[in-house]
Length: 271
Length: 332
Image (cartoon, rainbow over all chains, first blue to last red; front, top):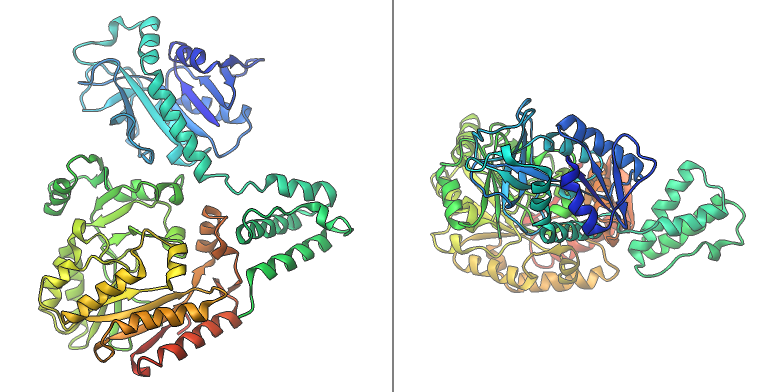
């Protein structure tokens, strides 16, 4: 359910250890790591790479829409201290001026900040904002895979006006990310709960599956089947409906008619 | 209540924005060029956002005052509607806003004076004719009053324009702003109701029916003109008893001689909104009920809708004369 995109291997390593993620083989366009209910891709620097990595990860992990997407990495900020974590409440692509506003639905687990995505590293920090190189590629692509509430960018400050990025090496990046693992885990847990509560909650797949294994439904009949089973679930919550109740019927059409008749009765159409 | 406020660039120093800032000192302010950047993107989920909506402070540039659809009115003059806000504090499952907007954030248009100018323009065009202005189409008129100051501002405007009529439509009990001033003869405060069991099931975060009735009665006692809105009518197997009880409670608390109007309308949603809302709330029994698609609108099957409407009309006429009853009809 969780999809994480980092730019650097050093940003990924603490997460791989903490969440027990293993490399997926064979390796495709990007290195992908997987664990129970979580996958991570290392995209390299830049927004084009980030966009491509999101698409790659979405494809190789099944392409479902009810996923949490997190862009995690280090970023510069004029004043915040190295090690502080900030959640982006707005993202701007410096090159194009385009802006996005990730909806902030979960309670604030850390302060929010504007995030500016630049094409070359920014060391003057002209605005009161985070500076990274991936979010403007990550966010618009990830929101093609999931609703914006589940797509977030968490940045850990690595450099500022007093501490320029010159001395930053892979080991220092690992330390910065490792220092925020508890916060990252809490954020992912909250987003995961949001995804479970708000999306994919009608759980019809198993029920529908039983019917389509035993009768041949056309595409339009399958849509009718889903509609009628969904209506049944809404009108009689907690009451299971099984294909076995209809096994004496030979054709999908007869099954649909019987189901629709049953649900019509539940709906109470008569005044 | 509000911990994230998006503000259109240039509005940060607007007096209403600053007053809201003082009310929510801990809120994070996020600048945006236009509210549509935040409100309109596709990848948003109304249901998820309803858990924690943000406030968006914006300017309305066009379409400030619009002609009301045919069948929407109280029998007199020309009818207009206007929306100082988009979206509502409440979470009524039958509400069309869930299907119309992608975002559940509250958009508050702070340029009240531009709305007033548009109303004055309409009044000039009307010559001496009476014009009705309906508030509460895209939001509840009073629910966010302590934050918006909307009613306090517009009551002063309508106080000096006898030719203009204002309807404030609400499910709120936020009536202090009205009780604190002299009543206006050209303003009607219209309260929407469904029977208490329906309200508990479908009108989330809305004050209980009894409290709304009490607020309405208080207003009427202080001289304000009040109206009752039974829109939408909601079917339940025991709807006859439920609506009889509701009408007895509502009209038992009011001076019927002084009651301004009652309107009623069936549950209906444009097909596109219905499909969106059903996707958001697949487990909601309301959308699995005896509904049909007719003329692009989803409503109760016609036999049921007519029965509901006939029954409620009959019951209403036991309390009020025909001339104060206004059925709301899309086809009218």
